[in-house]
Image (cartoon, rainbow, N blue to C red; front, side, top):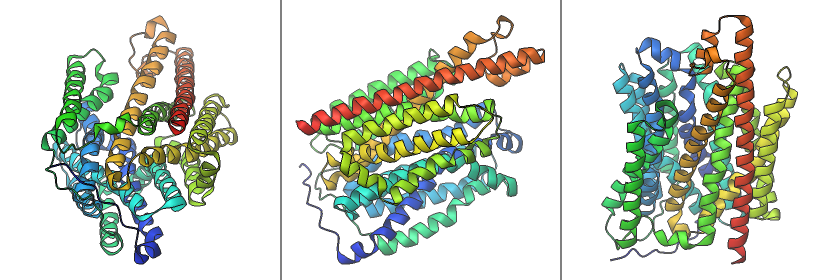
Length: 496
């Protein structure tokens, strides 16, 4: 028997009275989840020394969390709609907190990898449930502003990871990076229990177990192949096998969802031009933006000479400007006035210009760099909420979890592709610019170490700078192209 969606009841007086407190709790949970994607970047030397972690171990410690999270997002969104957004939010908090505690108590790399994977399960539930709850609690213009604030906290979590991790490591053991999550989770648990109402889709159909298995395995395989490709080599047997298996499993998932009576994800949604345009836009925009921001962190560290935590700190105005424009309601008001297609186009154009400014600004001054970061922040403050709204507006509110799952999945896939592809552009250009004697060096640090004189080291540094400029320019072009294509698709869908 197919699922029957009941209309979502309007929020009651108590919910309306406390809805901004509810949003604050949702954002606290969201920023903690996103922060754990980047907070470990400064802890690699410590983990290598204290746990005896190999390069492969470190990669799995960092990637296990993102791999599990991205693989489960669609399933987590469906579970939130079916079993209750508040319930999945509470379960996600418990799993994320338990995984953080286990990671903080780990004594071996295997234990830490397993704990990080457990955190990823909780993180997938939190990413989808926080957005789904916000959609249920807010209506009209307030919903638009709430989505903007939610999207801004994601940017904040991404940006503050390295400086937060560096600050913790400067005063506490590495375990504190994970243990600090535990009191945050406890606060969120109490607040969710007291404030957040339950909401779910009225469904009588059976759980789509095969759909869950196929989507999870397929997405994990594809994302792992994209993540491992630059390091292992795109033609490595393991990478090719994972990519092929993931593609086959995702194809089987699509075929199964067309046949099953109670699909986990209704494939008919992709026939809606609004939904298809918005989802395509998520991939295109995150591809360019995430890849270019990844190269920016390399520029700040290897070209400008900042340590990782200080590079993150100097990037903070980017995230803070996004938060400020959304908290004050400026971004939401501009999106309403301009319309979503124009907001996406203008926002991505600002982001592209900002990326070019920070790429080509002189290395001996921060004001120009700051100006570029503020342009980038203004662009993201406009475009990100508009694109999330576009995804969710194509769905009825009772499918908010599914929409959040699709949005999160496309964000992860686009971001992973951006880092992989623009990283490959960087590496290819760098290899082409190196002197013949250093052609075998596989990375910038390796090439510097192999350089025999200060003149050779200057050549290596200049080659890496030019290669970064090439990659960042390609990223800016991808951002602008993605914004324009997305705006066109949304504009055409609106007129249809």
